[in-house]
Image 1: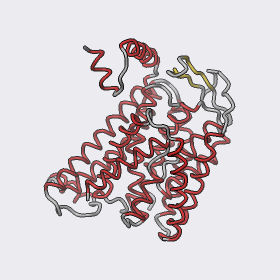
Image 2: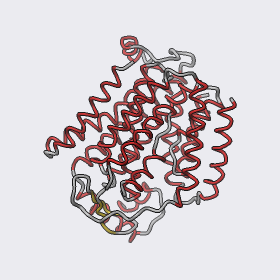
Image 3: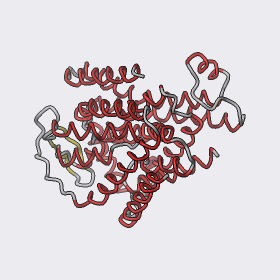
Length: 140
Length: 266
């Protein structure tokens, strides 16, 4: 039963032997992955999905209240107020911000894991990239 | 209108998946020539879409251990610098100049697509020693592949230019990154593609931050397109197994050249 549902989610028609082969392959790969891969993969996958979900809420709100909301980006304080009032544009903007934050969180995860793994070159590299992104944020 | 944009995003993304390119090179001309969106807003929308898709693709690469994280983060220093400078410059120039640059870049992309299959990679030295050395299990070859990237410093310049173009014209840069990683640094193609997908996400973030601050991101335009592209990317990866893209690729190159000419003349 479990094998059948697994094959359905993979979207391809495969035999039971192939399913077993693939499970063995996946186990071989997954068991050996360093934790940096596991954590980064989780952050990127769920960050992207959450961002898309929030954007979808904004799109639904736009359909429920056509013509509502402002057509452009909302500045700081207005943005949070509009978000609480279920403004469609504010929710879409929040989704975009979550999407932008996702790779940055992935980088933060890699840098943090590098500390625990005592991979100081990767740690310094991660810090440098975050510094560069901060400078990008400040430059106008 | 929103549904039309979602549909366009789905089609663009499926086409991109079948052709093995990012959607930016299709999305920007569609928005500029088809919907008369100012090119700065089109580029900003494309960069947001790139972040969305690259997060999902990079997560897959890392889940299976194909990505070389150390190499990706080192090279990202150059792509981020390039994207920041490129996007800062792009937000300050006239639309016509940006259109011409986009058209020029499209010619280069068409040329790379034309010669891509003829480029032969020297097999990487099988080694698991060295800081950038990595190992992954290749499900097609059913064996472990250990490799050590070489000439990493030689890739810096090309990767910087790739980042700059990404920030300027809203393309992912994957079409430049993968051949550079594969041919210059001799990273196996599967690992090069996964490493590039991690790199393009952070590169697009740098560009997006600049466009966001300059108020070129329009949520009502970007949202349906990004959602469509995410859906299309999911469908496209499943379709690409069944579709032979040789003729589609040739047709697309012609279409790219026509688009480039239209961008110059518009």
